[in-house]
Length: 320
Image (tube, rainbow, N blue to C red; front, top):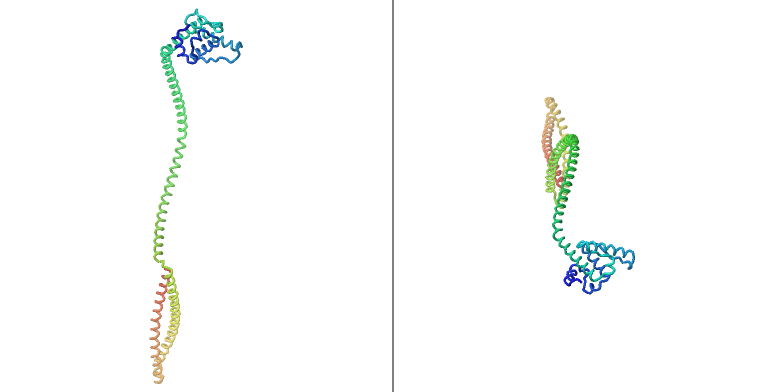
């Protein structure tokens, strides 16, 4: 039977299936099958006990494979050791304890081997894998660079064919730029002219704003305009009457001058009464001429006054 030290070691390594001394004192097929399945799982085997009935073909095949695995491990220690199907179905305390002791030693050995030997092997394998990955990376980089170089050659050939087209396009674009630059200069000149006109219009607007008068003053100016217009009309009528009278007086004066010449030439043959009467008529004519001159002067004054009133009227009309 295994010592207490072995039992403690087993229970420490295989927490899934712990053993007590009573289990080893009277081992059973079910208990031993469970122990061996747990043991194989510690090596990474995926072992599951089938749920079929006892004595079924599936269950027997499973137990045969289990015995084969355990027998292989058992023989590693000594080829003379054997573990049979019967040893599983009818386990004995002595054979079971010996077999479990060998399996426990092998488990310790494998753990140590994995810790020491496998570590060195894993380091080398890791180095090898690192080199393999580096080689793959270099190969992949070379492939990408080759593809990139081929693509660049294709693009270079395409761009070389596009150079003449772009040269022609450059000429047309340059011509278009020159045309648009000329248009831009013309537009700049037009803008300056428009700004000048805008400034002039703004100045006119300011002048008009200064000329704008309130509504009451506008009404007063309108009344004055109406009065001035009436005066202008009256002056125009007076001017027309004066012009008509002047024409009449001029006509009469011309006739009297002709008569005066005739009287002067016939003075010697005319009577003194007739001459005196004629002289009185001449004096009256001179007086009439004086009046005509006065009327002419008044007419000129009225004309000037009329012109001034018309200017004032236009100015007031513009302000209103």
